[in-house]
Amino acid sequence: MQRYIVSNALVFLFVFLILISSGFTENWHQWRGPNNDGISQETDVPIQWSQTENVRWRLPLPGEAASTPIVWGDKIFLTSADGRELVLMCVSTKGEELWKRTLAQGNRTARGDEVNFAAPSPTTDGKHVWTFLGTGDLACYDFEGNQVWKTNLEGRYGKFNLYFIMSTTPLLYKDRLYISLIHSNAWLVLALDKMTGEEVWKHERESDARRESEQAYTSPILYRDAEREFLVVHGADYVTAHNLENGNEIWRCGGLNPLENYNGSFRLVASPVAKEGLIVVPSAKNGPVLGLDPSGTGNITDTEWQIWKLQDGTPDVPSPLIHDGLVYLCRERGTLICLDAKTGEELYEKRINRQLHRSSPVYANGYIYLTARNGIVNVVKAGREFEIVATNSIGETVAASPVIQDGTLYLRSYDALYAIGEKSEK
Image (cartoon, rainbow, N blue to C red):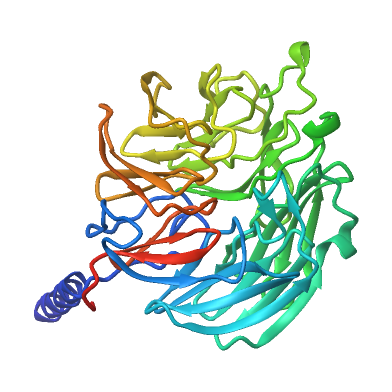
């Protein structure tokens, strides 16, 4: 028996070493990466590039979009405008377009060219890919480009009423898609069967928000630890936790838009981010940032479940990042704030540049990647001291967040998809 245990241990060690030596990586299968937090475990990621330097390939795209690509194995999926059409594209990791499918007709833009109907990002489980558009069209395709099912959530649940465009990205977990539809006609949280699109449950979320504050462009996230797992939904002046099985509300927290100084244009765009024992909740328009204990119940506003509160300085669009006991907040005009994750103490607030930032930050191999809308990516050393180690530019408009897989950084501009890394074949 002892010989059997030792033998199996050696086999496990052998397999582990093979995986390490072969560059085993996680798939970037959703908007914010393997764990929906912007963190990559890769250790061989480029920190310097230009439009030509360290660019493996550049694939021109048919139109603009703010959606972030996803990667599974040797396939990349992304949505895009293509004239008046909205399309799903499948691209190989060698930069070859494999197929393109039309999802909907009639693209629309808002805020100039900042956002269009191809704002939500796709998600995949390695066999199928799910896409959602600002038109309300939600569809499932297999990896060969065959449509499995399609529906329209605006048709099913009522017309979207927002100042701009519905931009929420669905969350895939196990056999369900979780979607939040928060706008002036409804505050809904949905769970749908991933293989049919049929409703599993619908939760009508309560709020006393008014005017534009009724609306949100955030995406739901998953909180998980050894004791609990639940959905986190952010919008209409509150962040709420929901039971995954039935949608029931576990807790809610307000205090983001105080009634005594109410802002009727306090629409929420940046999504929360979670690590074990902490959920960081941004707000809008230089409002507060909250650090919440996930184990609360009921109304946890201004209670012991609120671990800390940064009174102002929230990112308006980029979502926060948590790594190694630190919280990073990239404000929309190029200021990076670093906080202690346990206490909320501000460690630094430094100007990176004065450019508009719409992309969410990502982390890899000791560095934070911060992407401005004009295509400049600043690489900042992670840690309690501020240091810019590289400044890179592709000279094209970028609203999508960076993607990292297998030693390659994928950067999607309005014009093209870039694969950044050493040019030699891997």
